[in-house]
Length: 155
Length: 157
Image (cartoon, rainbow over all chains, first blue to last red; front, side):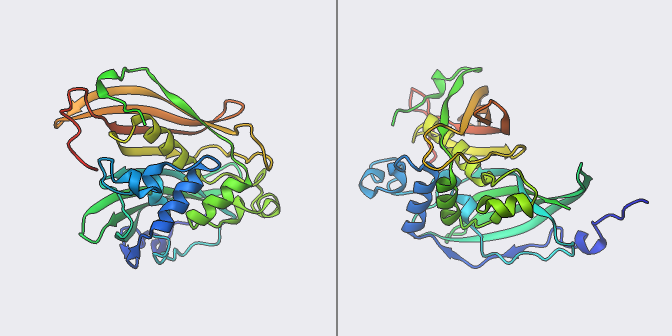
């Protein structure tokens, strides 16, 4: 018996809808904790934790680690897709583009949208691939980065 | 930190490998810093018996951070990582507590170099490998590097 697609018109309607998150103040401690976590058990890179060191670099002060984008926009309200609950959700991939450094005191706004939803028949059941795009802007309305990601839901 | 210059990069050149010992300690620290508290990264019983995974698995975002670290360590503070693409194809299992043996190795290789709009670009193939040599995260990276004559990079990004 042919299985019905999970990608209904209701699911398709979510594609392209932009959701804007609350402005996020980037605190020094968040940057330091992130820098520590991605280097542990080695000491973090001084550019992310030591003001005296950082001000002598071309950046003129502390900046967030490059991959700090992954921690942004966690409070953006999630779009509720009319899909049954998945057995497991996984991160299928990241594709981030960098424009400007993020600094302590910046206020970052995240705009998020789903750009594509596809379905595949996996070995153990259906797989839904959701491609999303998040654009991060700072308090001067400058785009600091764009994050494209693929989520995989296994049914 | 030593600076890498575009002039000294050759196609085919290997990026210095970046070895990581990943245990639940690293996953927990990253879960906190990245606000990524997901049971398949925290709870073995849940991973195996509810999600039917072999074990707790390492977050894709942590593998991504390690690949970015490899790149930024290599290019130095004068270089700019412009774009990093990674596909989380395989699962990485954390090693035992207090382990000192690397569980994951980030590697990469230069695939192209060119000048565009006055900026000096280098493209690389990157990947994470398990201790057994299985590639779990293939990807690619684009960086901008300064030149030895100091003409680039004039951007502060």
